[in-house]
Image (tube, rainbow, N blue to C red; front, side):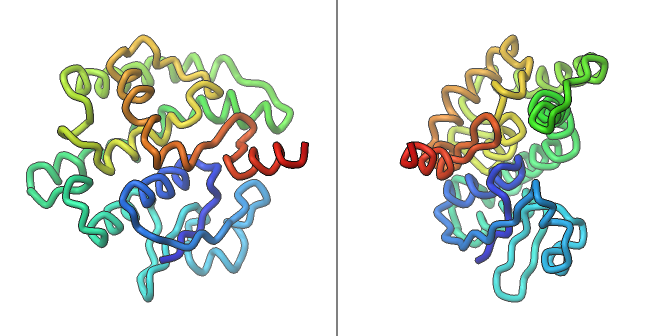
Length: 221
Protein backbone atom coordinates (compact mmCIF):
# COMPACT_ATOMS: atom_id res chain seq x y z
CA UNK A 1 0.00 0.00 0.00
CA UNK A 2 1.27 3.44 -0.99
CA UNK A 3 0.04 6.64 0.62
CA UNK A 4 0.68 9.76 -1.44
CA UNK A 5 0.62 12.55 1.12
CA UNK A 6 2.22 15.51 2.80
CA UNK A 7 2.28 14.77 6.56
CA UNK A 8 1.67 18.43 7.46
CA UNK A 9 -1.92 18.60 6.19
CA UNK A 10 -5.00 17.79 8.24
CA UNK A 11 -6.26 14.93 6.10
CA UNK A 12 -2.83 13.46 5.50
CA UNK A 13 -2.06 13.37 9.19
CA UNK A 14 -5.47 11.80 9.72
CA UNK A 15 -4.61 8.94 7.38
CA UNK A 16 -1.04 8.48 8.62
CA UNK A 17 -2.16 8.41 12.25
CA UNK A 18 -5.06 6.15 11.35
CA UNK A 19 -2.91 3.62 9.53
CA UNK A 20 -0.46 3.51 12.42
CA UNK A 21 -3.38 3.10 14.82
CA UNK A 22 -4.63 0.18 12.72
CA UNK A 23 -1.18 -1.35 12.34
CA UNK A 24 -1.37 -1.26 8.55
CA UNK A 25 2.06 -1.10 6.84
CA UNK A 26 2.43 1.39 4.01
CA UNK A 27 4.95 3.25 1.89
CA UNK A 28 4.78 7.04 2.16
CA UNK A 29 5.21 8.84 -1.15
CA UNK A 30 5.78 12.49 -0.30
CA UNK A 31 3.70 15.05 -2.20
CA UNK A 32 4.97 18.55 -1.34
CA UNK A 33 1.77 20.48 -0.68
CA UNK A 34 3.27 23.96 -0.33
CA UNK A 35 5.23 23.53 -3.57
CA UNK A 36 2.04 22.57 -5.38
CA UNK A 37 3.07 19.01 -6.25
CA UNK A 38 -0.54 17.91 -5.77
CA UNK A 39 -1.50 20.06 -8.77
CA UNK A 40 1.10 18.63 -11.14
CA UNK A 41 0.62 16.01 -13.84
CA UNK A 42 2.22 12.97 -12.17
CA UNK A 43 -0.01 13.23 -9.13
CA UNK A 44 -3.14 14.28 -11.02
CA UNK A 45 -3.12 10.90 -12.76
CA UNK A 46 -3.77 9.40 -9.31
CA UNK A 47 -6.10 12.06 -7.96
CA UNK A 48 -7.75 14.42 -10.47
CA UNK A 49 -9.12 16.47 -7.56
CA UNK A 50 -5.61 17.76 -6.83
CA UNK A 51 -6.05 16.98 -3.14
CA UNK A 52 -4.08 14.89 -0.69
CA UNK A 53 -3.91 12.17 0.47
CA UNK A 54 -4.42 9.33 -1.99
CA UNK A 55 -3.91 5.60 -1.59
CA UNK A 56 -2.70 3.07 -4.14
CA UNK A 57 -3.07 -0.58 -3.17
CA UNK A 58 -2.48 -2.85 -6.14
CA UNK A 59 -5.00 -1.81 -8.77
CA UNK A 60 -7.15 0.11 -6.29
CA UNK A 61 -6.74 3.88 -6.17
CA UNK A 62 -8.61 5.75 -3.44
CA UNK A 63 -8.88 9.40 -2.53
CA UNK A 64 -10.89 10.90 0.33
CA UNK A 65 -9.18 10.40 3.67
CA UNK A 66 -12.12 8.79 5.44
CA UNK A 67 -12.63 6.29 2.61
CA UNK A 68 -8.97 5.34 2.98
CA UNK A 69 -9.44 4.79 6.73
CA UNK A 70 -12.54 2.66 6.15
CA UNK A 71 -10.76 0.50 3.58
CA UNK A 72 -7.64 0.13 5.72
CA UNK A 73 -9.67 -0.80 8.80
CA UNK A 74 -11.50 -3.51 6.90
CA UNK A 75 -8.26 -4.75 5.38
CA UNK A 76 -6.60 -4.92 8.79
CA UNK A 77 -9.61 -6.62 10.33
CA UNK A 78 -9.30 -4.66 13.56
CA UNK A 79 -12.82 -5.19 14.90
CA UNK A 80 -12.60 -2.61 17.69
CA UNK A 81 -11.43 0.14 15.34
CA UNK A 82 -14.26 -0.32 12.82
CA UNK A 83 -16.78 -2.88 14.14
CA UNK A 84 -18.84 -4.92 11.71
CA UNK A 85 -21.94 -4.61 13.88
CA UNK A 86 -24.32 -2.70 11.59
CA UNK A 87 -25.53 -0.19 14.16
CA UNK A 88 -22.08 0.64 15.52
CA UNK A 89 -20.64 0.91 12.02
CA UNK A 90 -23.50 3.17 10.93
CA UNK A 91 -22.75 5.40 13.91
CA UNK A 92 -19.05 5.57 12.99
CA UNK A 93 -19.92 6.28 9.35
CA UNK A 94 -22.25 9.07 10.46
CA UNK A 95 -19.41 10.77 12.36
CA UNK A 96 -17.00 10.31 9.46
CA UNK A 97 -19.44 12.03 7.11
CA UNK A 98 -20.13 14.79 9.66
CA UNK A 99 -16.40 15.38 10.05
CA UNK A 100 -15.79 15.84 6.34
CA UNK A 101 -18.92 17.88 5.60
CA UNK A 102 -19.24 20.03 8.73
CA UNK A 103 -16.50 19.74 11.35
CA UNK A 104 -13.49 20.00 9.06
CA UNK A 105 -14.68 23.24 7.39
CA UNK A 106 -15.52 24.77 10.78
CA UNK A 107 -12.01 24.12 12.11
CA UNK A 108 -10.21 24.84 8.85
CA UNK A 109 -11.10 28.53 8.94
CA UNK A 110 -8.92 28.92 12.05
CA UNK A 111 -6.07 27.01 10.41
CA UNK A 112 -6.09 29.27 7.36
CA UNK A 113 -6.44 32.54 9.25
CA UNK A 114 -4.12 31.87 12.20
CA UNK A 115 -1.54 29.52 10.68
CA UNK A 116 -1.33 29.66 6.90
CA UNK A 117 -1.82 33.40 6.36
CA UNK A 118 0.84 34.50 8.90
CA UNK A 119 3.25 31.88 7.56
CA UNK A 120 2.87 33.43 4.10
CA UNK A 121 3.33 36.96 5.39
CA UNK A 122 -0.32 37.89 5.81
CA UNK A 123 -2.52 38.65 8.79
CA UNK A 124 -5.60 36.88 10.16
CA UNK A 125 -8.89 38.44 9.12
CA UNK A 126 -10.80 39.08 12.34
CA UNK A 127 -14.04 39.59 10.41
CA UNK A 128 -13.76 36.14 8.84
CA UNK A 129 -13.07 34.55 12.22
CA UNK A 130 -15.96 36.40 13.85
CA UNK A 131 -18.31 35.33 11.07
CA UNK A 132 -17.49 31.65 11.65
CA UNK A 133 -17.41 31.70 15.46
CA UNK A 134 -21.07 30.79 16.01
CA UNK A 135 -20.92 27.87 13.59
CA UNK A 136 -17.80 26.49 15.25
CA UNK A 137 -19.38 26.58 18.71
CA UNK A 138 -22.63 25.09 17.43
CA UNK A 139 -20.77 22.09 16.02
CA UNK A 140 -18.36 21.86 18.95
CA UNK A 141 -21.39 21.68 21.27
CA UNK A 142 -22.73 18.71 19.31
CA UNK A 143 -19.47 16.83 19.74
CA UNK A 144 -19.14 17.99 23.35
CA UNK A 145 -22.59 16.66 24.21
CA UNK A 146 -21.76 13.36 22.57
CA UNK A 147 -18.66 13.04 24.75
CA UNK A 148 -20.35 14.08 28.00
CA UNK A 149 -20.77 10.53 29.27
CA UNK A 150 -18.21 8.58 27.26
CA UNK A 151 -14.46 8.29 26.77
CA UNK A 152 -14.58 7.78 23.01
CA UNK A 153 -17.02 9.00 20.39
CA UNK A 154 -18.71 5.71 19.49
CA UNK A 155 -18.02 3.32 22.34
CA UNK A 156 -15.57 2.01 24.91
CA UNK A 157 -12.64 1.91 22.51
CA UNK A 158 -11.06 4.39 20.10
CA UNK A 159 -12.13 3.93 16.49
CA UNK A 160 -11.32 5.54 13.18
CA UNK A 161 -14.05 8.07 14.02
CA UNK A 162 -11.95 9.44 16.88
CA UNK A 163 -8.91 9.81 14.63
CA UNK A 164 -10.98 11.54 11.94
CA UNK A 165 -12.71 13.94 14.31
CA UNK A 166 -9.49 14.94 16.05
CA UNK A 167 -7.61 15.61 12.82
CA UNK A 168 -9.09 19.06 12.06
CA UNK A 169 -7.99 20.12 15.57
CA UNK A 170 -4.46 18.74 15.30
CA UNK A 171 -2.86 22.19 15.57
CA UNK A 172 -5.44 23.58 17.99
CA UNK A 173 -2.97 25.76 19.92
CA UNK A 174 -1.49 27.38 16.84
CA UNK A 175 -4.91 27.48 15.18
CA UNK A 176 -6.26 29.29 18.25
CA UNK A 177 -9.31 27.09 18.20
CA UNK A 178 -11.84 28.36 20.77
CA UNK A 179 -12.68 24.86 21.97
CA UNK A 180 -11.56 25.04 25.62
CA UNK A 181 -15.00 25.97 26.95
CA UNK A 182 -16.34 22.69 25.59
CA UNK A 183 -14.93 20.69 28.49
CA UNK A 184 -15.86 17.19 27.34
CA UNK A 185 -14.49 17.81 23.86
CA UNK A 186 -11.31 19.29 25.30
CA UNK A 187 -10.87 16.35 27.69
CA UNK A 188 -11.35 13.83 24.88
CA UNK A 189 -8.79 15.57 22.68
CA UNK A 190 -6.07 16.28 25.23
CA UNK A 191 -6.45 13.31 27.59
CA UNK A 192 -7.58 10.55 25.24
CA UNK A 193 -6.59 11.20 21.62
CA UNK A 194 -3.33 13.11 21.94
CA UNK A 195 -1.66 10.49 24.19
CA UNK A 196 -2.27 7.75 21.57
CA UNK A 197 1.07 6.52 20.22
CA UNK A 198 -0.21 6.85 16.65
CA UNK A 199 -1.02 10.51 17.31
CA UNK A 200 2.37 11.13 18.91
CA UNK A 201 4.24 9.53 16.00
CA UNK A 202 2.54 11.80 13.46
CA UNK A 203 3.09 15.00 15.44
CA UNK A 204 3.00 18.32 13.56
CA UNK A 205 4.06 21.56 15.24
CA UNK A 206 3.92 25.29 14.63
CA UNK A 207 5.26 26.29 11.25
CA UNK A 208 4.04 22.92 9.95
CA UNK A 209 7.14 21.20 11.32
CA UNK A 210 6.97 17.42 11.46
CA UNK A 211 8.60 15.27 14.11
CA UNK A 212 11.24 14.14 11.61
CA UNK A 213 12.07 17.72 10.61
CA UNK A 214 12.28 18.77 14.26
CA UNK A 215 14.71 15.91 15.02
CA UNK A 216 16.87 16.79 12.02
CA UNK A 217 17.01 20.43 13.12
CA UNK A 218 18.05 19.40 16.63
CA UNK A 219 20.86 17.24 15.23
CA UNK A 220 22.10 20.10 13.03
CA UNK A 221 22.31 22.38 16.07
